[in-house]
Length: 385
Image 1 (cartoon, rainbow, N blue to C red):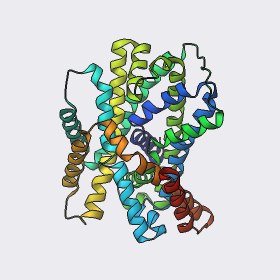
Image 2: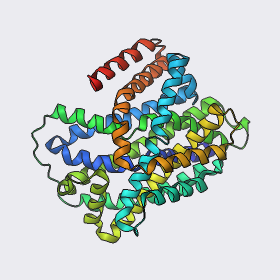
Image 3: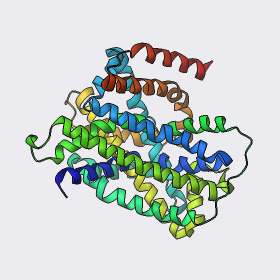
Image 4: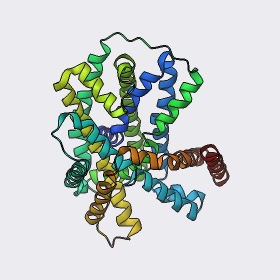
């Protein structure tokens, strides 16, 4: 196997583990349960925003050589700065990172001795710091430790779960209503925002995988990253399909549970208590890998852009994870409730910007400020009026 092929495989496994966090595990089964006889319609809606959009975002940011400031500043310096702040707010210690910690806590709670959420948050963030304070080791940890464990355990439960007959319940909602509802559920993974910053991280880590600057060019790195991203998204999409089928066939009786509780209840039903523990550990690894990637992105942002290297990468990492641990103590419901309207208003703006930037790089499509502003105004009207 030549070095380029090996690098693509390693990068695809790493990208997979960056994307595949807790939300990616718990939302597809819900789609399977509530889509009823419109299962495939609901699944297409979910995949359109949870897989297709992140893949488009990854391609777009790679065409900008991973420079997210250049990417966002096409709407103007002030507007770009505000959108970057919004993105960091969402994927960082105010929403996504504490959501990961609290979801992990909910998933593991049935299997671990009584431990408070604050104590768990501190321990989880310390373990994250120990894994990534040496940035050069991240790619190998993600690719060769976390991803195989996650894929193996999920593969077992999906295969065993699909051996049961599947019958879709009849529901009153129309196919269009289900489609639109599941596109919104796909938003909740927040993977488009992750892709825009994981593209930067992926290119940075790929550069470090080569021995010297003579071995690569930006064009070669971009091609490797796009191939790896496509492979990773295909795997993610296949797992979503399998998890949605599990929800349709085994999750109906747990419809009143929270998404995290539904996932664990299905695992215990299919695999038994001990098997459920194995899946819970795999889910925790998924959360752990995504938290690692997000923490690196935020620490790099604080180190390079906010403090202009006055605060080292390691100290920036401590600040980011410390803030994550603190916010996590408020609990999952509080985090989701306080951030919902904010995310629903500005996330479509990021989608519009991503599509405009991709069209700009591929076909020379220059309009960006008017489409973004129009999306913002429409989104504000739909969410607040």
